[in-house]
Length: 246
Length: 289
Image (cartoon, rainbow over all chains, first blue to last red; front, top):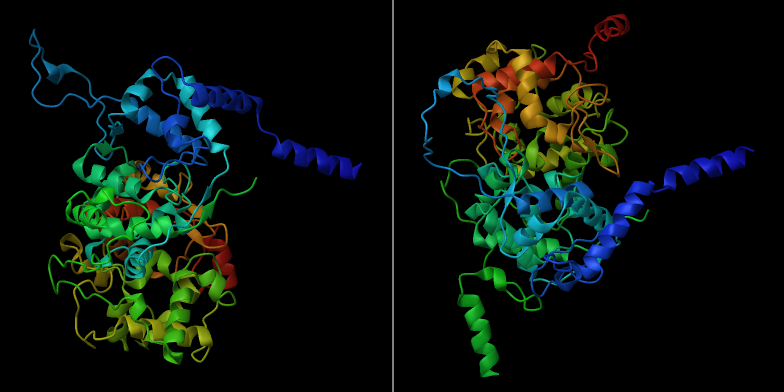
């Protein structure tokens, strides 16, 4: 009786909720075949979501579903209008009630990409959730890429300690030990192609990617030199990684 | 052959280094770190420069204790915090009480008990008050390793001299306040708003941070049983405000104003935390009621 109870409890804890299973099925179908206006994910990100290191396409397998869906939402977002705006009929805005949040930094995340943005705009919310759940459930094993020892040493120094003389923390302090990622906010870096990592830091610097929490990554990217990017990307590509077994 | 050489030359010469092919070795001439303001803060030696001898082994062990105290000094650690939870970037970050500045500042009059404190007694205090554990004896291997690590970080640093970036820094609005323990009056309710906007991402809505799988914390807990005790330095408003202003949010130090830092400190210090271990059992029991 006790054994049966333990087995049932274990089964219940291992059980995947049916709504997630449905979402995964939808995501699997969409990622393989695509639909009108949506290219199949497998054509660039690979059959197993492993990415394409030669072309710099990121891996999707094993990413946190919260991070995944947020990126697609940010890809779909248009850059908000800035600059002077004139009403056709002048209004007295001083009478408008306002919500004053002096401490909040409420940025609508923005991530622009010529390839991904049109695809993300065509996706429905349910499809984004489906893809997120499908790719989160996929196993992934990263191959460790060899690198120049001196570059790797510098990369390790940046990864673990950052540049404290400039107030820059190491990657490990948010992205976790061995860059496995922490929660939905801080993505896994291990297993991503070095070109992708360098390109993303370039985009933080140029502002075409601006969807970080609290401006954390932007302020760190500002301090990174070309050599820093290369070294830390080489170190991360040198890490071996596999998604934790369920 | 010539074609290959030309291709490699083009790749090395092109400014978009992002297109380096995967199987070619990454350029190795990019290890020099440009220094924007040379000599502004002390830069401790790099880890690869630890000598390969017995002293070097002690330094390496000290570093491991420093960054992962619960796994490498388990018998003295009381909670899951590590030295590097507060002494950021493995004890190197200026204005986060860096080891390279602390090494040359002791022995001196301590601020806690009115006695001369040595570096070792300060380390003992950290274990006792902040890690809520036991003070390691002066001749314990853990203490020797930690002292060796701090001494190595302070290689070529001046002794007994004031260094920029030492201690918690003294932001202008708090200058003088750090020593006299008088802070700007902080508002805990404004601090709560600020906490929800800027701190909650990492430290969580309940302030308990994120634990690491193998022990220790990815993001340390700010209050509650797992956090540092009420007897530690950061449980006083002025040092905590100075620390927050200099270092938080991580990577965006000095982005808070002095008033914001004081508000945040006020919010963090109205939360429950372990009682000061100097109190008697009954007093501790009352303090946590």
